[in-house]
Image 1 (cartoon, rainbow, N blue to C red):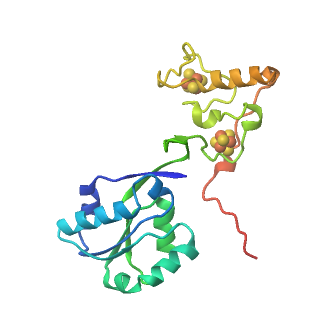
Image 2: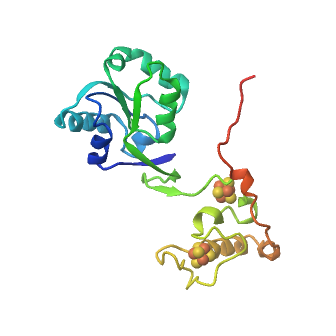
Image 3: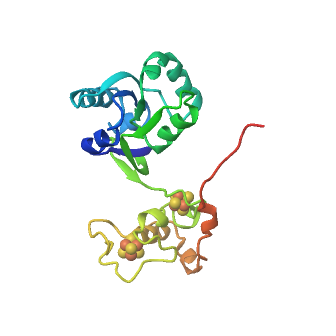
Length: 217
Ligand code: SF4
Ligand code: SF4
């Protein structure tokens, strides 16, 4: 799940200042779950833009705008509104915004309404927690399934820093120290021996950008 938050409305309106006819695209997956880009938020944005003097030529909420096939199917259903627009405002993460740019055959100007913040798991109550930074070299097998790259404020790989206090992180005293959690988990599973092994520095080439995974032959 990609977590997004809406940019301040005035920033959005300022970014669209050169354009008066706008088409709005939401996201039926993550941004709907975060309540930043679902049907309700698209409708609210339409009202905001209209009250600032813009004309909204149409809107749609593709089930996943980051997937070209799903986005293109929705764009073709809305071609009239798109042709009337000068610019498109996308209420999704940066993936959806760039997916629109890649699949737009009309060459429209495209703007993000949201900031993309982090990748997360969602608990049963609908809260989101960042758990993985997509580092490209997973160490969960030796850290009891707890990610030090993401959950330790300093991303340490070989145990806690000197600032840990009573199990809490020195950077944020409301957070458990990730390495205390890792220690307890390894202790529970009789695997504390693995902490004696020094982990080499991560190979940051593996998290180099941009990644790609080409599946089509
Ligand atoms: S070590 Fe952490 S950041 Fe890296 S892939 Fe595993 S869970 Fe993700
Ligand atoms: S106190 Fe623990 S979680 Fe916080 S930075 Fe130090 S090792 Fe990481």
